[in-house]
Length: 494
Image 1 (cartoon, one colour):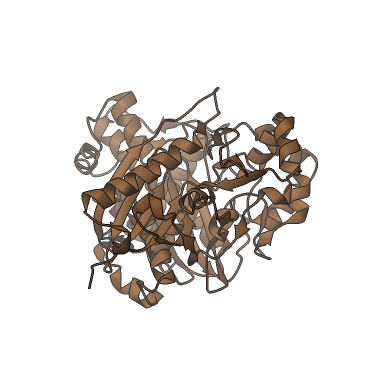
Image 2 (tube, rainbow, N blue to C red):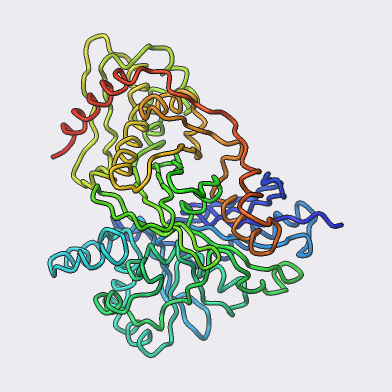
């Protein structure tokens, strides 16, 4: 028997990666390449969609070549992607008609203000589970069609196609045969109704977007089609897709309501599975589709922290009080506490649950005895405090209790931070052996569709614990620390 693998394509904001997984969910090889960011003016961010496709294809081909594998060794391809980034292209030629507009891009902020002034925000909020913000794809498409009347004309004539990065990659991989997406990505567009599971005509009308632009919505795990044979020397089934944060939730085996994961990257993304129930947030979170399996939608609550691990980069690059991220652990544990120092890293405002773009970063509680160790410790603690803010909001909204918090991402490797997170939450925190959970989730979705894994039980068995952090701090003391944080947050608000 030929040893077979699942190939995960991880299309991120700054790089494209290809990762091979075996049946045990272990990484068998990685290829990665960065691609350029385009900043036409302040607050605007674009990508060249053809460069993304060429980069993603190259890393996949390089990985197979390096491992001396051919198409027959790959049981299926799963795709995970930066969410909300949107591209428009020509239906006949397959060429983009404009650079992709990236999720970080703020150019459609005025459109969002118009929607709110017109009193339509509650319609979007109820139907999509999202807040009206330039972050999401729908207002980006509207901006393109409004700013370029010739594109609107062509869109209305049915000559253009639109899609998020999953859609764009599948279109290219399939030799331009497939124009599809799935619910975890569709639910980030402001155009998808999370109750009906379909594009919503009223929302399309409010944003003046022709329905013909949009891809067909398929399940998150099914064989959509095959790759063009010339790409990998044979056809490979394209069989699973999910947006990056939902893929990480799946990769962490968070299949039951009340299971949650926090990805500690540049920012922090907390997602909690709420099962078949749509949990409407009253606390500043968004409701999103986690995935669709066997015709059944699973939902999640999501909260995003803008500055997570990036606060450690700030200590290194701007303050220059550490030389590398690893040093932060030694400095933080060299003191018993922060000596009353709190650092609020609101460098770009505050995300969930505050959603205050005018908040600014600050350090409070400084005394003559405070030194860099206290400041470094306060910076690390700020990541855990912000995550607790989101999780508290989640528990206020969720129809379930938090069962366990599973963690991944670069900063999850910091033992001090993980222990402090457990103490603050008074809940166990579990760190898995494989922390590449985004790509792993995409691999699992594809593998289920092609029978590489038979069931969710097979996937659960693969999840292995690297370390479990249990609360060691008394609940009263944890609460006291958290109350201090709440006061610091108030000082950072305008």
